[in-house]
Image (cartoon, rainbow, N blue to C red; front, side, top):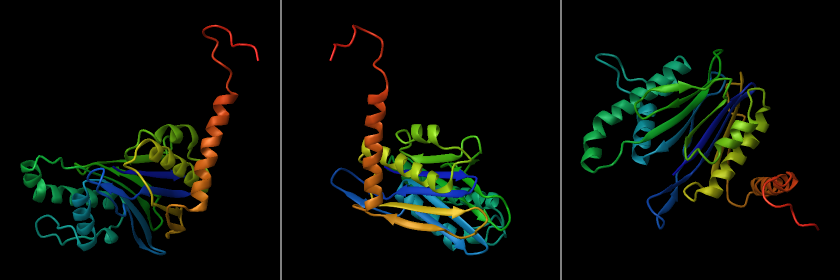
Length: 251
């Protein structure tokens, strides 16, 4: 299982991804799911992945080495894409290319062809973008009305994002909310876990401002988890008792 979230706010882009992969309760390992393709001063692009690990690795290799073009067109690398939209299209082509090669084998083994990707960043002076790319190679773009996208085990962390994230949210508040969303997911699903990779790209900077891995025992994340749990307990105690049923006993 996986959980990755991308938040595109007024000041820039935040990406948060766990690293847990498993093939059963007794076979748990870690694998980086957040990757960056960057040329400082020219472009910064982040790619987070969920789904079948072998498919993900094949798609990433194609994007690094070059996705074959149609007819006589040369292969194209992700780092060479002229715009973010064309880069998202290239990722879709890479997914369909892998599907065309591997689908028969997946069908024979009765394994679902599963991959989803968050792709965000900025090239040159064009606007910063964030896309969710599906296993068919099609994609949607993040909007200012709902300035985040998720892949993987998203249901536990979504309510927090829905309530707390706006396009005007400060960049590092967005990172904090993304980490709270990750913590909520980790508490409810053992298939999502540490280490956590985080990346922050400020709009117009064309470089990563933060590229960091949160390991088990890191002080800030431990404190964030404890504070969030304490805040939830205090919040529910502060809400009046429901006016249903018999009156509360006198204290």
